Image: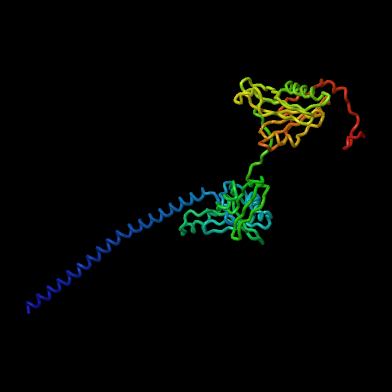
Length: 387
């Protein structure tokens, strides 16, 4: 009996120890859990802060990116954000003729998950709209959820009642072969006939037509900008006297002279080449005695006469005057003031220029006080008749 009682007591003690051990384990787990929870919270908070900082950094980067004009397959950065959408339409109109009618063109800005219609294209500025979207809650929340943290801001025109067609920026190339291989849908290139052509490629095929106005190219003024001084007036008068001498013969003759620039002494030199002449023709043999040193003497101009005939460039002149230099013809030499015309030849392509651009023109002057005695007392109609 005693033995049995001792056994029960031992069991009871053992059960009590078991309960104490379980309580200790629960307390330890609770304590560990209490320590772990702040650590997890700190880690989650730190991750959120890191993500927010990254999103903020992405937002700063996005704000620095320019908006993009997008129309069909065409994309181009817009660096002038101060322009309005209407100003952008006017700028792109030469490339995309369907944008000509501003009343038929509407605009939207697509930025990330935000699409914003433009209600006042003539007043709203592109950069301001981009900034408004960037600061909006919709954009920031969409950016946080999006995989692409660097979306571009696309500015898109839409033409009502018309097909957008294929629109892209033009590539200016050297040949139709280059244009055909170019990935751009619109290509410009010159041809042998001197005409510029425009090639447009789409799913229907390749379209090629001549084109005239190409606003991408610079405006060029044809002409001549002399690198040398103008031919002195006194020197040119001596040439005219030489021409008149042969005009006053029994049978007036045409003659010519050549003008060189002496690069050493910095002055013009007149050379009369050996020539066969008649009243209507001049022949100058290629082989001439005493050829000048081309390194020192620059062959600048040919000047020839038409004796008593008008000053004009004949078909024979066009065939002869192929070298790139200056050409002058003098006619009506029987008159006190002869006719004089000047032109340049650019590899056989001719253009007339004012004589005063290359020859000093001496104008007679009179004392200014002479005008004091002149008092007009009538007016004139448009035809110059006195009223």
